[in-house]
Length: 168
Image (cartoon, rainbow, N blue to C red; front, side, top):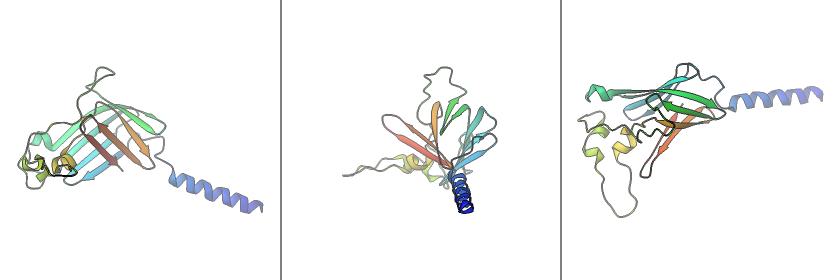
């Protein structure tokens, strides 16, 4: 009976360890979010500095928009990570919801083209444009990332839009 009890506890601990969220040490790890034509990464360089890296996977756009890197400081507390852009000088820093990319003429990253940004009016629900789905780049200012199991979830919103990325 005693061995059965020990075995049950051991199995429970193994299951618990497999389903737990990201371990305490995220330093040195990189989490990735892939969408059509784009890779977004959160790279935690050490215990306080990280980088948000957005890379469009197309060679026919302006090189200064192909890869955008935002340097941040971070603090991990329980199941959240608080990011603060290095450019923010105050606790009320608001750099805007997204990084604005002017229309590009791209075959592979068609969602960055001017035509993909046009809103089509219809009766009923309105849907996101291709640019809103795939081309919005969150502008990190002071943001919270939620840790849910083995994923990091970044949600930004203002009065008009919401942007979300899931990093694995």
